[in-house]
Amino acid sequence: MDSLDQTKVNEAAEEVVPVEAVEPVNETTEETPVEEVPAEEMSAEDAERLPLMKTKEEVLARAQEVAEQGDGGNKQELELLKQLYYKYHRADLVAAQQAFVEAGGDPEAFQPEVDPTEEPFKQAMQQIRLRRAQMQAEQEQLRIENLARKQAVIEKIKLLATTPEEAGKSYDAFKELQAEWKEIGPVPAENVSEVWKSYQLYVEQFYDMLKLNIQFREYDFRKNLEAKTLLCEQAERLAEENDVVKAINQLQTLHQEWKEIGPVAKDLREDIWNRFKEASTIVRKRHQDFFEARKAQEEENLARKTELCEQVEAVSTEGLKTFADWDAKTKEIIDLQAAWKTIGFAPQKVNTQIFERFRAACDKFFTEKATFFKTVKEELNQNLQKKKALVEQAEALKDSTEWKQTSDALIDLQKQWKTIGAVPRKVSDELWKRFVGACDHFFEAKNAATAGERSEQQENLARKQDIIERLKTLLEDTAENSAQKVRDLQAEWNSIGFVPIREKDKLYKQYREVVDKLYKQFNLHHAEQRLNSFKTTLRVTAEAGANSLNRERDRLARAYEIMKSELQTYENNIGFLSASSKKGNSLVAEIQKKADKLKDELNLLRQKIKAVEAEMRREAQEEKKAE
Image (tube, helix red, strand yellow):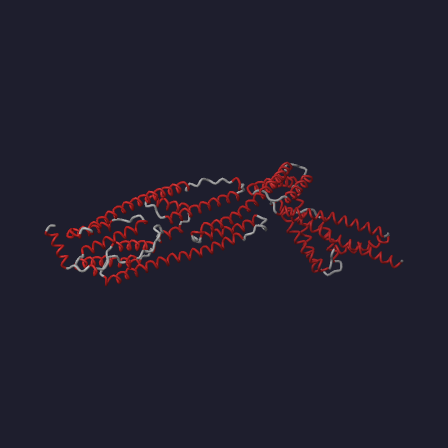
């Protein structure tokens, strides 16, 4: 042993303390295991960013970004990226199928287009998976290498602890070995405890072997105290870190560093550990509060999503008979789907199940809607064939010059048209224009052929306007023969022919207004007079016998049914012409006038039938009295 080494040993021997007085190096209170934190939890920044991704393109961009970074990302984020992508992917498929069906397509014939984002997304995820596998293999190999290096350090410390004759050189070598130990990274998890215990054992043996003097131990304790104080300060600053996941991961690193630092003086040991533990507790508490709050939010999201599932499942399609009904109910479903998109994730263990439940309820509705539209489509196609046949018949008649016969035929076709239901929307307007065009073509030709009548119609207009003015003068006339004057003017009105069609409705309205006032003023009602006259002649019929009354009643009943059928035809024509061309509208007033007149006649016939029946009852009573 050289002189320098001998001097160090001698100095150490002069101030050495008994072995029993030296505190063991293993500080059990300081080595309490740190709470395990998942190595791949997302940062708060990433957790907040994911729900903002509203499209497949945004999810794809994030996946490609993670792939390009080459750090493998973290497992939780990758799982959420995959869920988001296929959620939007399936939503686009459902929307495309719905649009296909609403456009008249057969749901069974729907073939989705190739999604241009799907293959890049799969490639990005595959690249990430390969990188993660590579990193995991590299990390595992590095841990195995670290284990071998730490075992080598332990063997060297063990050798130093068993060779006291080299004390002068051993202390410097021992400190170098400790520094080397700290630089070595983690080892496989199954070897952590065993390696640490071996290291601590031989470190203690080395200190015991050396019986270092108080000066060496105090120096070591002081340096360890400085290092642990720095760790306490770093742990305390973590309480201000906004990202709680990042903070807990950094705390784990600090605890690992703490374990690598040697002991401090016994009287400071508990205080420094309590300071570090209190700072750690605050960080852990914030971490726990963060994930409990997120868990509570996920539970609330689950409750809201469950409620939406129940609302969709409660939708009934039994009463939906029209397109409007289905459209209204479809809007409800779409609104519920929009509300679903505003809600965040449910707990991971049930997130997929609750989404599948919601999607199944929506799919059930849209399947039933597709079935309804398929049935309606078949009916629309049948109606299309019927209306095509009518269009062809109308076009075959449009050039006819048989005005009366063809007019009746076209009106009959119009009546048939109204009894046929709807046709596919894409051909409805075109078909209707062809049909109305054929009808208009004929009626315009008919009007052109009768153009000579216009001059006479102008004269008729002037004559009828003069009758209206003369009727107005009778409103102030109180003479006894005023009622007869009204009847004479009405007879004259009826004897006048047609007026221009554009003036007919307005003129007739003026005429009816003044006549109605005169009826009220003179208590004049033509139908009432006809009824009174009929009752007078009815007595003569009654004298001819009961059979005569029966025949009269049958005659009136037949006339009633004929007029009723004729009225129905007029009303059908009015409905059709009101919805067709301007030419059709010009006929409405004339047909309406005829319909009103038929209604009056029907009312008069009802009164006559009642009068006959009353006379028959009277005759029967007289016969009974005579018996």
